[in-house]
Length: 187
Image 1 (tube, rainbow, N blue to C red):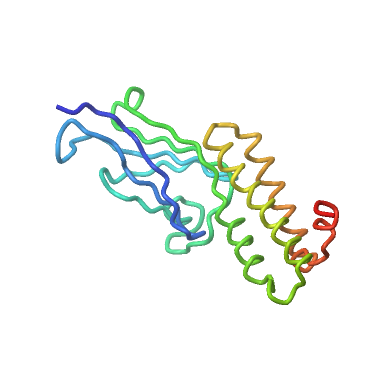
Image 2 (cartoon, helix red, strand yellow; image 1 turned 45 degrees about the vertical axis):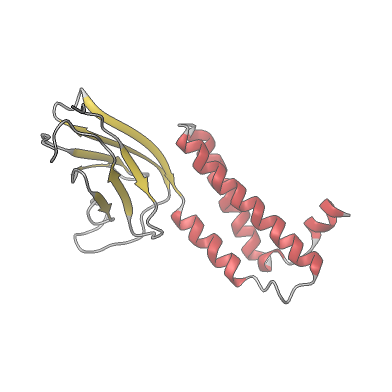
């Protein structure tokens, strides 16, 4: 007979408006009989939301359901480090915690910069320069995710902020079509 083993997975929704959490737990009974399944979500810049959690299901949270905005009004969720704690009664014994970093808004900016880049209109040096800069920004975004997954919160925030600064500079400089980095690194 299986034992109670709580686990959750934060699943990408590819949407700045939603946070997806799936129950990956094993329960001693099928269907699961648990008491008071709740999830606490510490939202960067806001209070912790304590919500009912739908067992054996994919749970979608929005700014409205998290109490950030008025009911029915959904806005993009903030990027940053989220701490999630799923528990069933008694909560002091049966819980699982996860720390993640949301980068959806930053990724959306990255995607927009990438799509605006006129790769076919640049010469080879400029095209290579842009690829180098975009690759560096992407590397910092992935580093922030990896750091948060390993509970290195300070490092995750540093990497996220660096990626954001680099992306802002990339966008301000006409998507980096200057060729300077290519000339420095490849000549």
